[in-house]
Structures are given as structure tokens and as C-alpha cells.
Length: 303
Image (cartoon, rainbow, N blue to C red; front, side, top):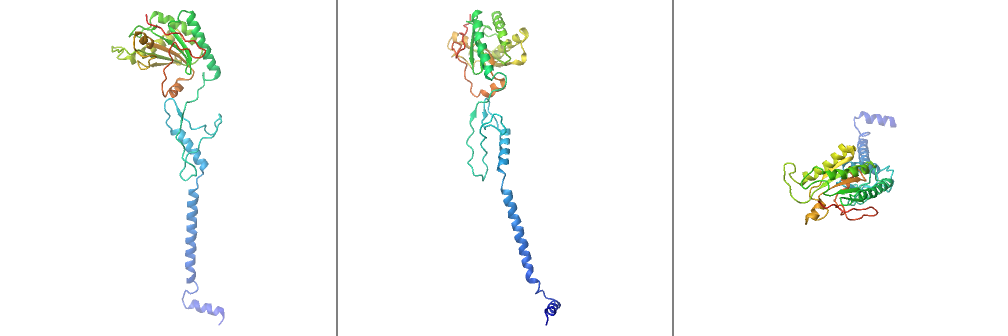
């Protein structure tokens, strides 16, 4: 019997001997193919683009990091930072071959435009010397103390401005401000007017505590400089510290008189930068102390 006749005979018999043995192979091949595709997809998904992921992590870190007053988290310069420097440490990723980052360190913020450069510092240093010389020649040496620090130029006015427990400028206090106003107008730096008191308690209708008294005294100085001397009000910020930041311990009338003061501070940086820098407050040096090349005049003793 020929092969053709054998094939026809097999098909006529109605059996599946010719095809049944190959169907399991098709099913097996489909299963293997699906498994290969499945594991290939898993492998592709498990491989992260670390460079992109780290850039995204740095961006989110900068956006959601809570900065402490007076500081920032020093995460290093960002990408494209014109200041240059080493790139920031990459964040730790699960499964990545690198150790988790160390705890961040606190670093002081950089300065801002408007007085932080070398020229601005030299101008303020020179101004502090001019003020010290001017108040000395004007007979105010026993009433005004001038010194230069990292904040800027501080002009400390003792009890010459106000009577005890009052926030109304005295006549001789107005004359002192008249002498100082031309110096304040020489530079465009922001000015912080800061009021302080001694530890003597006060509880009046106008001043329930030393907080109100110190703030009101600082405000009175600002009003006089703006309304009477025509200075730009946008340059000023007013602070009242009450009795809690004394220059010296309040042990007698002389020391309390030194602590009753108003400081006029020509700031080297903007007030916003000052707030970020002030994590811990360091008292201003005593009025008698000389800092560097600037002059410091003794603080006033109340009459």
C-alpha cells in the first residue's frame, strides 16, 4: 500500500493519531513564552534609572525639608549651581549599593544682596568709625555706644532717650536722634530698632509688662526718624525684647540703667536672613568693649 493510501485510511478511521501527539507541545510552548515575557517585564520594572530617581529625590528633599530658624540643611549645591562645588550626596535608595546618608549638618545661610559683599562690609565699618568720631566730637560720647559686629553697625542708646517706665522721647533724646539721622541716611541698609528694659516689673494700662514697654520705645524711635527726619519707613523693623536680653546682670541701678536701652542696628543682611541666622541668640558685647578697629563708647548712666 502506498503512503497516500495509508494516510487516507488513517483519516477515514476518524482517529487523532496524526495530530493529538502535537497539541501538548503547542500549549507548552505558549506557556513558556508567557512566562518569559512575564519575567522580562518584572526585570525591566525592577531596574530603576538611578540618576533620574536621585535627581527627583533631591528636588523633593529641597521642597519638603523644614528649615530651622537661623539655619538651613546643608545639602550641598544643587545641579546647575553657578557657585559650583561638589555635587550633593545622592539619597539612599532601597536595593542600591550605597550606604544611607549621614545625618545632615547645620550650616549658616549665605548672605543676600545689599550689604553682604566686601564693599558693603567696608562701608559699614567706615560708617561705624565715623559715627563714633562724630558722637564723640558732638559731646554724646557718654550717651551713645557704637560698635561693629557680624550683624552690622550697632548704635546703642542708653537711658538718654526715655524716662523710667515711659516710652515718650525726651528732648535730649530727640537731639541725639537728630545727630544720628544723617549717618543712618548715608547707606541704604535695612535698620533694626530694638528695645530693651531692665528687670523692674511694670503693670500699667499702657504697659502691662516690659514686652510692651520695650516695643513701644523702639516704635517711638522709628516714628521720630520717619516722621521728623523723613527716612524711608520700608528700611525699618521693630523688635521688643523686654527684660530678657540684658547686657549685664541687673544687680544695681547702674547695671539696670545699662540694660534700659534702644539699639539702632544697621544690618549687614536683610531681616529675613537675620531671622534664619538667629538659632541661638548671643548678647551684644558690652558697650565698653572695643571690637577690632571700631570705636566703642561707654554706655550712659541715667541722670
